[in-house]
Length: 514
Image (tube, rainbow, N blue to C red):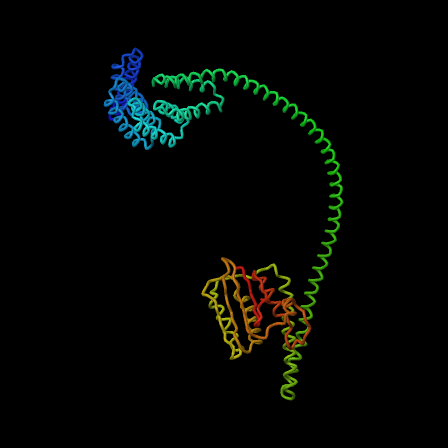
């Protein structure tokens, strides 16, 4: 039931709106008929009624059109007070509609302001007319409409000619017709002249009408020449286009000939290139096969070398054990000789273990260590504590590591740090030993061991991490500690290096990707 009432209500509203629209249109048509019959009073009354009807409907375009026509019919009979009052009503109506629509109606504002300007021109009030002209200029600048800009030039010309400012009027008029001349819209130029003659006639400006008519006659004669010139230009353009087409076809034909020659040359080059490529490919296959054989042989030799080293180490172990027992028997009879033998036996045992570990690390570099999370600050402090008993009393120990969680292999990382710290303790009798941890990025960090010890000679720094780089007494060390640490660092996804620029001792930097 409610739906039925709703539909009926909508139908009534629609019919009412349609009836009101038809009524407004009928009033406007009656007003136009009365105006054509020169019944100005009736026409004015009907235009006012049409304005009100369209205003009630919110049709601002038709409302302002009817209102301005009624305004004109007021002031043509010198009813200026009524004309200005109607303009004020239309201005208020436009403001209300603009607020509803949230935009500015530039066309209607221009139309209404122009009507005010015409009234001031008729009243010969130059100051007020100039204000309205300035308002029109601002509206055109804001609207950016070519149609309004053209209308403004007409209006400016009318204003200037009416108040005897012929130079300004000519400037506005010439600017208007030059736009059409540039576009070669000659009919519109002629229309401008006719419109200016109409303006002069309305203003009873005989000199302007005479001068404009003379220019119009000159323009009419020149149009024929311009049209002939345009036709000649069009023919010349067609001729040039035909010549261009012929030239393009000749160029295409020549281009095709050159293309055929080029393609033939390219085919010959490709054949030669394919032959060369086939030769190089065959040579590459032969060399690659030979290289594979060399690599296979090298790998076999490396495996044999590893097995040989392990075998030698295993065979050395019983002998070293026997020497160890002999040194034990000599401790009571010849303690100094026994101590010397024991030191060398221990050095040989450690050398044997280092050789085996070095060989094992080299053969498993592609295999990384398992990782786990741990606190780096506590880790560094614990590592330093393990070597404190080997550090000279005059040496200051510094640990600078924040309490951060990192992920690596703590056992292998500790082996590297302990070796570096033990070396620092051995060669530093005064000064400081530092252990620092620095984060350089989201997944990059540095562990730095620095000492003020005797340092390492420059000529030895280049090959410091290479095994078997120098021959010396095994009792003084086998030189494999740092190479083993470097291999462990690689398996920890890092790199161990010495700071060559540090001159006050030694500084080792362990870079880790964590």
